[in-house]
Amino acid sequence: MKTANPTDLGFSILEEGFSARDTVGQKINELSMTDDRDAFYICDLGDVVKKHVRWMKALPRVTPFYAVKCNDSRAVVETLASLGTGFDCASKVEIQLIQSLGVAPDRIIYANPCKQVSQIKYASAHGVQTMTFDSEVELMKVARCHDNAKLVLRIATDDSKAVCRLSVKFGAPLKACRGLLEKAKELGLDVIGVSFHVGSGCTDPGTFTQAIADSRCVFDMGEELGFSMDLLDIGGGFPGSDNAVLQFEEITTVINSALDKYFPADPALKIIAEPGRFYVASAYTLVVNIIAKKVIEDEESASDEEDEGTNDRTLMYYINDGVYGSFNCILFDHAHCLPTLHMKPKPDEVMYTCSIWGPTCDGLDRIVEQCSLPDLQVGDWLVFEDMGAYTVAAASNFNGFQTPDIHYVMSRPAWQFVQQVRSHGMPALAEESYPFELPACCGRESNLEIPTKPYHGPVV
Ligand SMILES: *Cc1c(COP(=O)(O)O)cnc(C)c1O
Image (cartoon, rainbow, N blue to C red; front, side, top):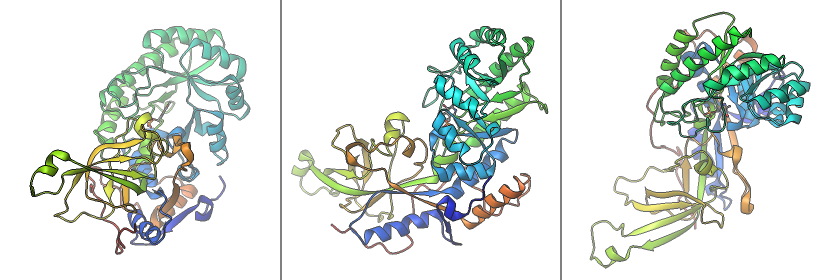
């Protein structure tokens, strides 16, 4: 692996006592002095590092293979590569990106059950052997186009309680598995294991238990047919922030007991997962600027004489990022995004019913249908947290609006930790010897208390 210093990675080291949140405030102050108030991101790579430590503590038996589609930022994948994760790639370009970091092919799973023939050939030519399948046609393609594939049978799960379902599109039903394994045998292919995905944004850890039990059945079928089954891939679906319905550790407790029951420790067995959202969601904070505003007078209450609140109107705010940009997650990822204020409102601040709209000329470009905010002005800033998963990765430049610049930061202790892992491997996890504080597993302040420097007020 080539060496990487902060300049290579393109991030800034945070000085001691300075957090990523402080950077948000600092950047806002900087831009508030000018007319150039483009939306921007702060990405805290230290948060990605903490997530990895948290993963290794909670799921010591499971090696994470980061799902690149969730956020393919070079700084993110390079940080993860340094920490020693594997990668779930779904296409030739994703494989190219990960191999350009110097990651060995055995740290890549080509986890797309329905691949284009030319891309299977690409994987074959570049040493990527492990790949998923869920149909006979795929087996025939692989038999023709890949010299030594190690195949992983993707099974369907009951993902009815997940936010984003995947098993309608992918995964063989249990009753089809024996036939598929027999077909693989007939074609002389090597099946090495089973994978599944419980759906992204999993809200029911029982889905994992069922899927792990089903995987056991398919393992047994495979072994009966003479395959040496030694890879279990439990997919993604883990929450990316502590504001999710279910805490990460609530899911992992259930997973660990299912693994111990159905897949007791065995040196020949390798267990991996394909987390995407888990690693990146909370690392990204998006800061947007109000570019236009409309005040809609509420006719009924306007005629009332002086009611004590003056919230007799609703406000429409237009901001400089929308559903064609970062907020595509509202359409594709079923996300609900709510802003926080970068200045804490005064205790007696009057709040209004507001809607928030993106910058394009499409009426669909609405970010928040209804929320409560004070009377803000053009030039004011709004902050959206937890914006790292399925946002920039799928953003477009529709209507001439560019995706926001991303400023990457990492604390010095996190950076030292990454370097230490790169040269000596991951330290033993039982000890409390981490050079930085681990995230509290639950709870998190709900409102930003930034900036640390005085705010100069809106300039209209
Ligand atoms: C999208 C995807 C993932 C990542 O899912 P998350 O819910 O973001 O963890 C993992 N594996 C496969 C096959 C995927 O398609």
